[in-house]
Length: 546
Image (tube, rainbow, N blue to C red; front, side, top):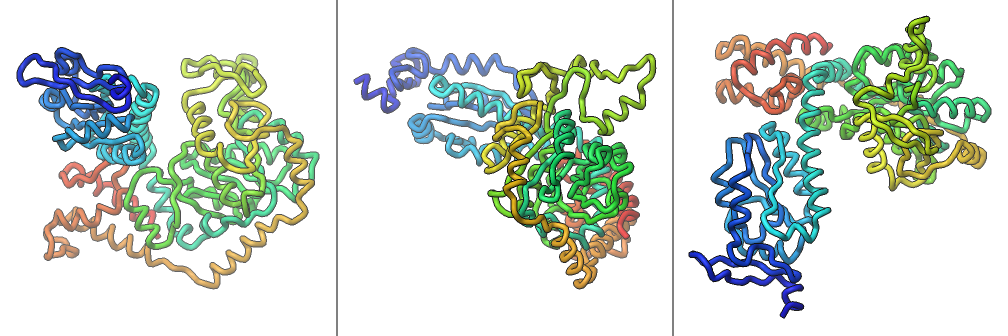
């Protein structure tokens, strides 16, 4: 009998109390008490504090004992989801389920992820609370821990991003609107996909870039496409090495230091919400891409108008974006891509490569009281020790470490992607020294004709002429919104076929850039206070549209 029970969950009547309850035996273990199966879970629920805005995560609900008691304890803005990692226990729980709780088996984790993100994006939920409803969790404890950790990360990321949006969202949106005319009439990243047929070198601003620059001076760079992040650009300028492209993601003024003294005519890969005057400073070709800095229906409007064709997920690090761009640019996956300077760490005494704005700033401050040594960066409270590729003791930060982990998760399966950085956190891609780049260049027999391709694209765009209809429509909508918010029912734009609230909602629903940076801007509200704040924002956005 035991062998049979180890294959399928078996129900046993406890024989005590009224009504008579069942317990479950599975894989030679009882998943509830043999005498009072409800007692343990009900006692746990009774002792558990449940705050407002909590997603309660039920693991292995089995016979759903305790659910009624849990529902009775729920406070406003709380919800329950359930997960089972064992097929047999999932079937059992599903067969006795008499509730509307969302219930997921582990082969549907993508839907769990998506549904949880939708819940969190409402702004109503701030925490995850895990409750193990039966002993079934012991069969897959590591998987349950990973699921809990992943869902906690979703909640934490949302609120971390909200803080960033409150601080910088207005700047992102204003840059987006300012850049629209250039993007509408410019070259998109999708236009230049699969156009680079020579080896590509992606350069971050980490210390390992120093070693790479020394070696680059000794080789033929005509057969190499060099793509650098903006912070690393001054290092190339000081080394008198030209780059083929620079990636700009930053929206704040501080990044302008990276472009001082740079050779005019360098191709810029610019995010649609990046600093608006950088294209003018560089004076070269601009290739536009878009990053979803906030979930907005406005992105769909831009796609429909073909102002953008694709949207990058927010990666946080310009280095990760540069690698993603390089992989899109290469003609096929036989073309090797090399990365350096993406250290995601720093040594005791240094944080960046020579010539970068951060390192130059240290030199500018140097005097007899302030050394060029930047050792204090390795000993700040947020710093943590780690070990480099060479077994050397280095320092990193939580965000840098998460970028390294994100890099490995996104790119570890990419073909012909090599890390040739001398130092830094190990990345889960093929690694080697500078010699593999040299061999790749020697074996390459063609020519890098990216620039001639861009010239042809520019000529085609000129021949097509300008299309400004989207911007004109946007201006009209914003003028109408301004008048409706100012004059209400007396507005000349008033549509009598719908209520004023409906008309406002229709205009605002797909223009989240007006309020995404509000502390409560994760959802549209028609409350007077919310609308007054939008009215204040309108004038500046109208000023930015030509």
